[in-house]
Image 1 (spheres, helix red, strand yellow):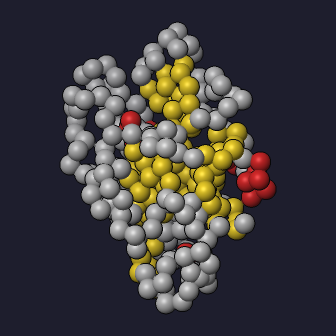
Image 2 (cartoon, rainbow, N blue to C red):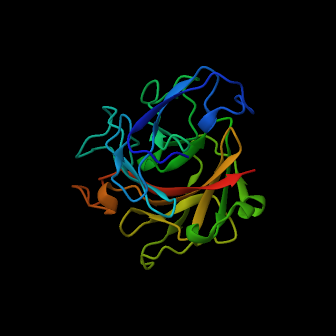
Amino acid sequence: MALTLGVVALSVLSSCKKDGADAPEGLKLNQTIAVKNPTAGGSALTLTSSTGTVELNTSGVYTVKNYFVDQGIYTHPDSVYHRPNGIYYFRFSDNDNIPGATSTTAPAPANRWDLSFGGTANAYLGKHSSVTLKAKDVAFASVTLSDWSTATTITPSGTSFGHDGFLSPGTPATYSDPTPLTITGWFNYYFDNHEVLPITNRTILISDNLDRVYAIEFTSVYQNSVAIDGASGFPDNYSYLHFRYKYLGTL
């Protein structure tokens, strides 16, 4: 992947595997898409139609911060708690947000996406039909392509994959998983603070339409990664998604 600062427009006129093979970065026939290519160790780039940013470190890890799509739905203070801010769509080969056709409907077919984020606090994952989604309890720093074969396959239905378990009132605010033998989501809900807590070492794996595998670790749904209570006493400074990802290889 080229690491040139700025936005590069790619136009593909050849056919390729699945969506047409030999086309760079998985673009479809005759499809033109802007790709965010942050420089390794350089400045963050602003996501398309989003206040969020994406940056790349010198180890090949991309970090997305404050991924918030202003869709005229979510405002502060919000009288309807746990309200989703429409749906976000992200494509990993583009390192970018793919704007939806509307706040609740997917982009046009030509603008293929990988993961969607909807439901409570936009913390629930959906996937494009061309994508395979898996999860494994392995540290993000040590995950490799070989983990794909032993990871748990996830088939999101609606907004099913997000919440995993509950940390009941009085439980220490740890990131431990109350149901470590099952994988039903990437976060626990902490009742004392009504807060979303990512599960430590729960890594999401995704294979896109060209069988490229990425590892993803979610870290927060709150602005600047700090949950701040609103008038209700519950955090209301969501849905600002934070996650990091890296390319592992091709199946």
